[in-house]
Image 1 (tube, rainbow, N blue to C red):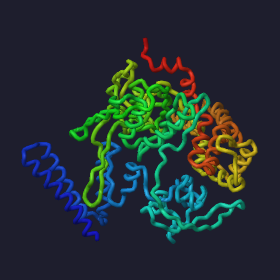
Image 2 (cartoon, helix red, strand yellow):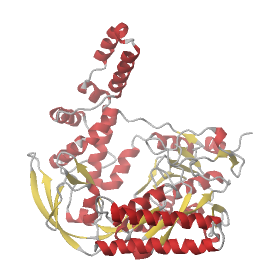
Image 3 (cartoon, one colour):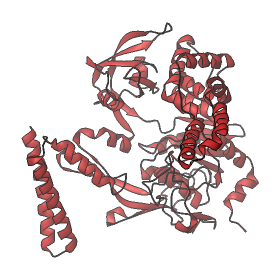
Image 4 (cartoon, rainbow, N blue to C red):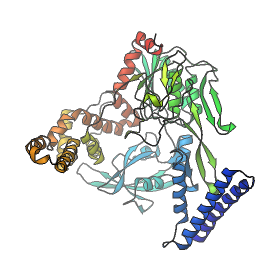
Length: 558
């Protein structure tokens, strides 16, 4: 088998070299450079295979070379071998064969757990619950396997079945063994997980993806809200990573006249260069719209939000979007592989491209960050408002992102909030509706006791910075004179778990409530919980409920 794999690798490279060589025969210097470098690559693979001290795995070695080559171009040009097509299918179709659950990894147990069974999926139908420890799949022990490995075993052809052994936490603190027979289904990511009519007759639609056919679900939701009396609309595109460009154009068409240019793609080939216009009569040209965006709003989401901004059809609220203006197309490769290749850039109606100038270096949250005006170019909306390129869509109304406390990161990392929610649900078979549920002071006191018993340790940023400062003072010779001041500051910054749990209780309670609510009401419940104290939504509602302010934002400066 190894010899066959080696022959395959050598054969593929030889064919590529031959093709490049015949191009060189035409006298094109670029083809010569291509042929030369592929010849060198072929020689390196042969030399390594023959003389390297350890036996090469041709699949692993060549794959790493391919991945490194593609990543040097952009992060979105990716190779998928024959046995790794599920991820690509999910991106394109919004579906995959599996059980429909999110899993997490417990570092202490060294096992994966069910984090969230999705509503209406095989996981939920079978009765799997958040907190179930995954033990075996068809008799295969899952101990030590990573989340990615376990996920791969859970996925498979729709209609196939398997036996899953789990251990479910019980009220006594132990775990009860359970076994399930589960039939895999085609799992569809719900494009509109939640929509509602808010106070003031404001419709709200959460659009989570542009994969599949989200325009149909969006249309149904919008028409339902209109029947219920919606007089304005919030479209929530936060953390929507995109999907199909055509779907973004279709949804934009609901609110824009027929024949409007929404996006233009420009690439090397004629096939990669296209203009996408609205093709149908709109649903509503007048309803005031606010679109919520953040650093997770990307690709097709930026086409929708950016085109509505450029055509002065909606007020954009939130923080700067991700900045992905590159279009990918799947291309078939030998031996069942596929390459998702960047073929063009897209440009929204003002003529700007939302692609980040530097898409490899980003902030920790994935955002583009501040871009100097000197590196960007000014464009104008249809009404003459100034907008800029250089990275994502800058909202008309920017809402400062709240920074989560450091302690919350460690509580989540150590699964303490997750574990508390599991125990809470065991003691409470029912809870109030998602709209009314809240974590009481008694609940929080119980959570604090659990954290203390767990011997919880966490790093404080202030302590880390103080340690660095002390090292610098020592190095530069200031430590002796400043010793008393450092000692006093160190005393004040000492870990005080009780104080931190009380001081940051609002943020921690919010996270606990979200974890509990989604155990009973799934993704929809989680969204309802998160919207209860949502500054970006509040800003959008304030604009939509103030007609003069809404019009002022969409009018050019005079």
